[in-house]
Length: 113
Length: 113
Image (cartoon, one colour):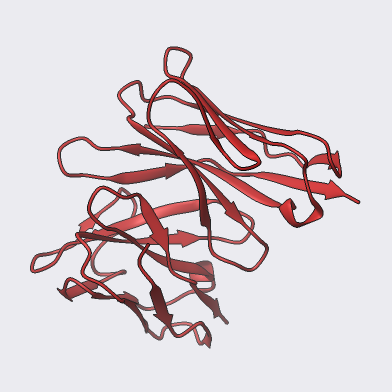
């Protein structure tokens, strides 16, 4: 059973702070990792993808991947109230032609003005 | 990224009835998926919709309950059959085009009474 674990939160940070979201996964052969943001009542929106060890930065967002530790994280710098949402970690197992995503339960982030 | 639409956006249904959800993409895509998101939960993959052949179902989901069609590379339907209140969920289709990751449609919010 492939599993993706996240702290459910809620995680509360003040506006302007760094929010740190963490995720671990069980399947060592996983190749691709994603962070989705989901506002209440909306569908998930892709915000970051990462495929190799290290950091990947996109604006205020930085994804970090450590395959040896089976760990992926998302940092949000200068957090804004509009960042308040549930953040879903997803892992893709591309064995053969099967590109299935396994999702964590999500971390609810609240950014306080 | 592809533009994805779903119909209906929401529905309230009586137990024992069936509902067919449509997913339309604005471009041809290689893979389409159907997910369920139960209240307060993360996303669970129901099946991969295969063009021109039977869908591939995940453990716990069967064709008799969730028949899926995919007549071409831009369209798929998911039917929720013989519904019970436990089927009340958000149903989401997603697409994967080429080497890109998955993008989600807006979802269909289903309430079964």
